[in-house]
Length: 76
Image (cartoon, rainbow, N blue to C red; front, top):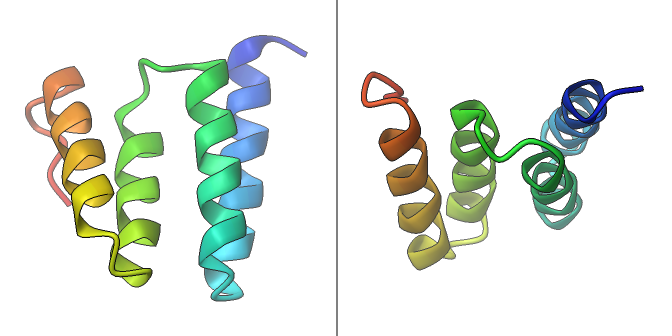
């Protein structure tokens, strides 16, 4: 599996954890996705949303900012 495929697999696991309201696990998987492919804005916006659920607003802002730097049209 390539890094891009690994990244998508990690994102999907993060999405499953998010749906289960397991915010911490979701963040862990989104972080692994970013480590595998740091050029995909959706990984950052997903992690930002999980951080919002944990009221970790500083981390959420940092991730949202990174997503916008990668793709200025990446608005959620």
